[in-house]
Amino acid sequence: MRRQLEGSRAVAEAVALCRPEVICAYPISPQTHIVEGLSQLVKTGELTPCEFVNVESEFAAMSVAIGASAAGARAYTATASQGLLYMAEAVYNAAGLGLPIVMTIANRAIGAPINIWNDHSDSMSQRDSGWIQLFAENNQEALDLHIQAFRLAEELSTPVMVCMDGFILTHAYEEVEMPTQEQVDAFLPPFVPRQVLDPDDPVSIGAMVGPEAFMEVKMLQHYKQTVALDLIPDIAADFERAFGRSSGGLVRPYRAEDAETIVVALGSVLGTIEETIDELREDGMKIGALGISSFRPFPLEAVRAALEHADRVVVLEKALAVGIGGIVTADVRMALSGLKLHGSTVIAGLGGRAITQASLRTLFLDAHSGRLEALTFLDADWELVERELGRMRELKRSGPHAENILRDVGAVAHKAV
Amino acid sequence: MFQVRIHGRGGQGVVTAAEMLSLAAFDEGRHAQAFPSFGSERNGAPVVSFCRIDDRPIRLREPVSAPDALIIQDPTLLHQVDVFAGLVPEGYMLINTPRTLAELGLDEFVKDFRAERLMTLPAGDLAREHTGRPLANATLLAGFAALSGLISLDSVVLAIEQKLAARFVAGNVAAARDAYAWVRRAQETPAHA
Image 1 (cartoon, helix red, strand yellow):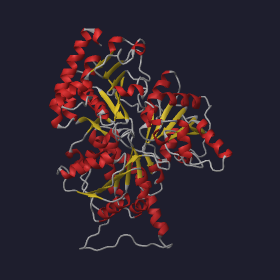
Image 2 (cartoon, rainbow over the protein chains, first blue to last red):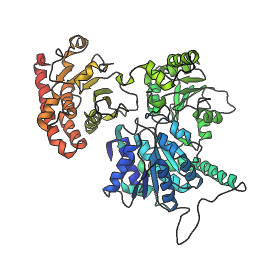
Image 3 (cartoon, chains in turn brown, cyan):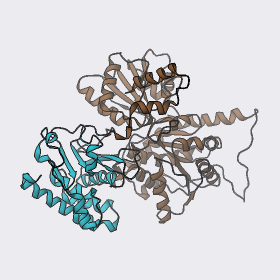
Image 4 (tube, chains in turn red, orange):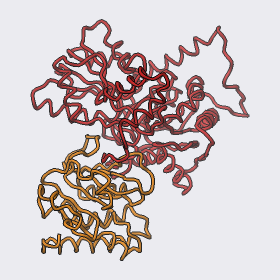
């Protein structure tokens, strides 16, 4: 049924349709509406049988998910930003133990400076944890990816993160097609755990593994993700047959076939990028985009196939690897190794800075005519940075950066948008 | 695409207003996207929300900087925030106040726009009359429906029924109907606007 819903509500209902048996969560913006919605569905009995566990921290949330999953329950949680960092140790454990937990990341920046707005720093910080990471372009895809995620996680016995842009998607009302319980039941079979803590058939889970076998257990994790490279498109194709719409998969090219310049990005910014590309295409520019839906596993071959005919590749990233620049860039470059392509990295939208069509248009024009530097910060105010650098040169005790720069900016709360 | 920006303060239902507008447009078979300006979740702080309405799916995700319409729920913001920023020359504007645009000192400003598309509406008073509270978000949407013709009053009523808690529906629907009629009357006697 087609409905006009908040993204968080759409995801909560989709997760409920997947019949999770344990949901444990600690609220953090911008994830809160998702778990509030689910707690309500459990409380009213619409989602049953399911235990909703209010935990005291994100570390506890992931720990409860691990315990529930190991006991054979379909387990779900959601978090963002500092919450993901706080549970990081357990995030790695869930992957290392091979427990098929599904977790929503409502993508948000990481402090300091503290910032509740959207970027991809949180998910990116856990990219090597062993979790599969799928990124949603819009709320329909966010909804659909959760249904696919449970199936993917359970087929591989590997945890899956569904990453959706905080606020931009989680708090946006837009139309979604909500599947029926029958449709989801037909697509997602009941959870049959590969390992289970069962008093009648005792096993231990979580052995200490020394140098004699640690590498092999890690290799197995990596191997599962290479299997996921085949499984993700298969599940997406199955999904399309069952639900009649295309969602997920490894990569999503947009007008890229004959493109000389291709912009690579993840998540909801692809919408604004596509609008900008349509506009520039009308002016005759051969430009396209490549959305990366599966960031882990990273689809090296699919990325190479989509980009190899281009002259220029611009990777637009919502996270910054301090000290080098791009995170996605490194993987894209690996996919393109041996090819002579002009590559550039654009860091955009950090801490919720709006990525506008006007700025993207200028950026793409610069890129297409070879004027883009190797590393660009979109719409950044270098003057503010220079002023702080000046203070640092003049004064040994120049004070805290964030407060100094805020003083230069003035009262930000008074800006209209 | 038609883009609306709504200004108000935390606690006035500014975000809900944009969501209701998107519901009304959706009910009319159009594509709509509503989202808040993020972060100012404090009572009394300036809050902005946005709604895009189009006949094709909406992919754009940036805040609305050149609105086709402005709805201003709190006139005290006129002196605090640049609420008019980017309003297109053909744009609509509805301000929640019992005063006229002239009384608000907006004579100079309105000269650049089409006079019949800019209006004030005592939406807070109408809401208080019917609901006992001056929360004017739904009332203003009905006024906006009358002013712009973008959505019907029926769709606004449907959105109120879908979005607001049951105990607030009847009063807000009555206030909305009053507001719609008020704007229609004012349109017939332009001097009043």
